[in-house]
Image 1: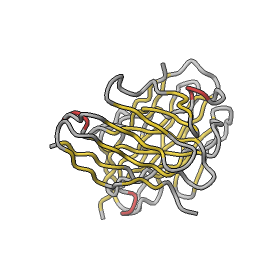
Image 2: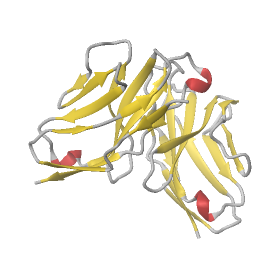
Image 3: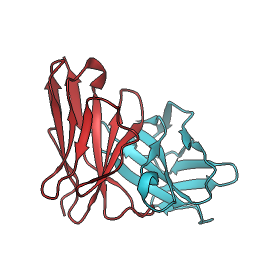
Image 4: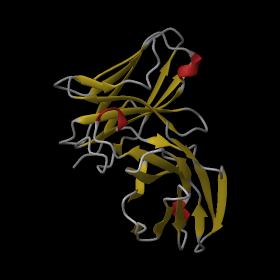
Amino acid sequence: AQTVTQSQPEMSVQEAETVTLSCTYDTSESDYYLFWYKQPPSRQMILVIRQEAYKQQNATENRFSVNFQKAAKSFSLKISDSQLGDAAMYFCAYRSGNYGGSQGNLIFGKGTKLSVKP
Amino acid sequence: NAGVMQNPRHLVRRRGQEARLRCSPMKGHSHVYWYRQLPEEGLKFMVYLQKENIIDESGMPKERFSAEFPKEGPSILRIQQVVRGDSAAYFCASSRTDYSNQPQHFGDGTRLSIL
């Protein structure tokens, strides 16, 4: 079974600085997708960024980028120019690349609570 | 285009009562997933449904929990005879297809509290 591990329960960053959140996963599959979700205090689950395992190029979305190391099964999230609104829980998630069926669900890590200091 | 709608936002029940949680997927989405988030935990998959069909319920507790997604109307997660341990946030997500590259869009969740 696939697992997702986030080893940093809490992280803190100064406003305008850069922070990296770690995520590792375990899988025997070669085709899969990885996601980072943000959960602010309002409890919404907001998709931040996603990465297809078959793509070597790291995904980027404005101030958010990932460092995807497939061989090491590592998928870290880098937030540049941190803003107060970035404060939230961040969840790393895995989804099998097998078509449909019982592999459709997301497998989440336990999350990292990010605080942004003004 | 409205997002995934969940109601109620908060639900309080006494032990032994029934809880019904509703989820209306995004327009054009026919795939619904339910997740449960215990305090200080990540989300855990419960059940995956398409219209009128349960595709995967491997994450559902064997007793007291059921889910449906009728042809008309929202998906319902039903918990019978609730216990304190059912207190959690329950999230619904929907997607247009079940292709793995399709993102799941989440609702705001229902926070269930058991007295």
